[in-house]
Image 1 (cartoon, rainbow, N blue to C red):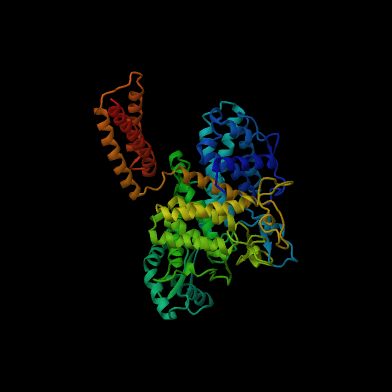
Image 2: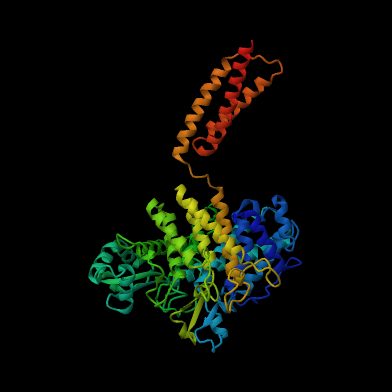
Length: 614
């Protein structure tokens, strides 16, 4: 199934508007304002494409395109859509603000208790989580960009007043989310003889070398990164002094929420209200690290920088987050590619070290960090080819591109998803866990990102085929009728023989698919990969065609209807056009040169035949 970003995004907009808006007003419905994560995901299904794709812009009503208006008709008319979105966003900000006027980042029903017999308490549902912090960064930046453009398009006093209030609330939430991300970052140092140390050695050594050899290689490989972390002690990174000992192992990344005893951020010009005490263990999770990386990179996007969306405090926080972003990428990318032979990431499925879990989902999250790093440092062909193979294997093992067998346990990867205990959450009562159900959507997102990165024709072709297969799998999982029609997720649609699989509306999967389509649009906006071989062939064809065209111009015109002159002008224009494309699009230049050569040959044959008759 070919990915058609414009058509498919409009389908999602139409379904989202139909489900969530009534006469221009946002209806929370199924989440009841309990989960800031789900509510942010729902709004981003509309706002993310509207701020990332020029053709989907809603912040300049005079330029909104007809098919976009038709998809958004439940939200309002051309002039009503922006004010109605502002009202919906303001409602989100109010709903997720505490009695002390501090933004809240509740995970809500996304949290699950370890014991199914124990219900989630109201206080536990209010706990903040990295998913919410990261999603809020993306939503707030999209909102601020939307407001900055739209404010030049309206003079209505009530709208401008609402716009100003929303900007203030959004800036406060953005700052609070960035502070919470800072306080959720963790560096965990542990002894090689500890249980976690033995697991890390097993993962990166793959039982091919002695523990001593793996430790020595770890010390050498991570010496520069260790030095950077030690240097960063003065820049707010909390870490045990034992990090200085090279015989100690370490991990860095994001815990599931604010870390226990994490200091409050106080060195800002404007104090940030709230900053609740953390309860999470100082244990990095690769899943929450990926989530944080996705949100933080939006702080440095071209749109954020061009529009100047960050104030002085936020720029300061962004630099602090960028340091942690770099550290985490370098660490997990190095762990994924550790050693000189087979990568640990190629040994599927990935085993976590802090919590003894293994799943293809964790392999995908480590691969996602590797993709971040490959994009950052422009990957080698070898790195790219090996990563493509990993993606193809994950798609097969996850039954995205292969058939499900009878009583296949892999279906649990999609429903109910992968359950991950949250270390430290027992301080709030019963221990909590987090459920990840977006394996297929994450696979599609990383595949499209890799395809956008690749400048290797064979690798990109494999990635595009994989992306199309994964998208077909995902598109088949849309809910066909009833509540949430046109949205996700109906796992039974692709695994009809699976037992205990339920259809349920998931804003998490819906938002991820929306992100994938925006990424696919960015991929298609790129110039196609240039083939040096085809470029040489195209130049040879054009050289011969130019020579023959010059010879043809030496011949006198025998026609009196001007048809030969028109043909010669057409050939000249096509040759000029093909020569202009040969460097960027050699295959197109090649295709254009062939009919020109045929036409020149036809003219020459006609002239020879006329000469013989004469």
